[in-house]
Amino acid sequence: MANPNDSNNDKNTENVDSSSFASILAGVKRMRDEHGGDFSENDITIQRKPQQQKPSPPTASSPVKPITNNITTARKVLETQRATLEKPTAKPVSPVPQQPKQSSPPPRLSSSNVSNQIRPGRLPQQPRSSGLSDILVHKSQEKNPLLSESMMKTTPWVFDGSILSDYYISPTFQILFLSLKYHKLRPEYIWTRLKRLNKGSTIIENRKDNNLRVLLVVVDIDSHQEVLRKLSDFCIKHDLSLVLAWSFEEAGNYIALGKHLDNAPHQAKQSIRGFKGADYSSNVVEAFTGIKSVNKTDVSNLLANYKSVKEMVLQCSKHDNEMLGNIPGMGAVKRRNLKQVFSEPFILNKVPKE
Figure 1 (cartoon, rainbow, N blue to C red):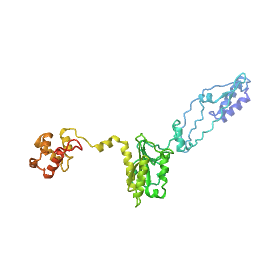
Figure 2 (cartoon, rainbow, N blue to C red):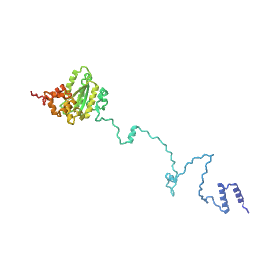
Figure 3 (cartoon, one colour):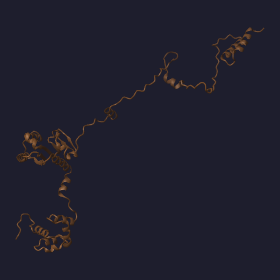
Figure 4 (cartoon, one colour):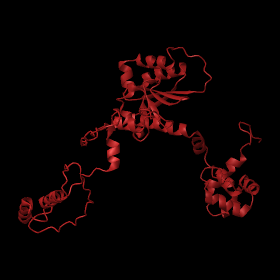
């Protein structure tokens, strides 16, 4: 006797596609019925290995969508999951969703903050300090035209309200400035400046410090004789050296030149003294050219004819030095000057013998 279920199953299998998931379930149910077992669906577990399916090539009709990687690796799970302390097992807690970081622009820093943050140990910049080559100028001389009409334009200087003089060259060289036009309006001004220079006193004792204190006066009035006479007496009594300038430009040049010579005292002495020759001929030429109207060519001709300084002096000091006339360039005036020099006494202020 045929089972009616079999006929029904055959009809169902004919209507169900063999490659669909419903056909697989129908086959499993038919196997259960054949074996006569009454099992629940939860008692049987079918384990199947996942088959790797080859990706189908994209067709022209459907555009390819970008594949987003939503796979979470085990390392990320371990880093993001947190476990509870419940018994007997610990239940994982869902990871906290990470919010996307918003890129905020860096804060703008001012130039002062940047310098302080880059170099935290750096001290703030101090105002420019005066160096050894700078002239210190008192603030009372701010509108003095000599600062812009002379060599002071190219000489480094800086204002300083703490100095006692008007122009501070060095610890041993200081200058007070005075205009005669201003002096006639305010004659007490020079006394005030002198009192400040002497630290509150107008009494001058005998100093032995060898310091140079100069009163630089610009003569800018017509009748200046009497005023200068009083200022000369004032400088003598108060240990000041009086220097006169006839324009503000000349006064500024004196200050700049004083600073230049104070920075190089050795060069200043050398420029005044001159350069001394190292050889014998140079020394002879330097000595004989000091005589009036005698030049280097005359000295060279004398050396060529007489071979020594002694013979030159003897021939020039003779009463009859006509022999010198045979030397080119030695005229009557030069012979007379040479005779006069070498006939004078060697010791100054000594009466020559007749």
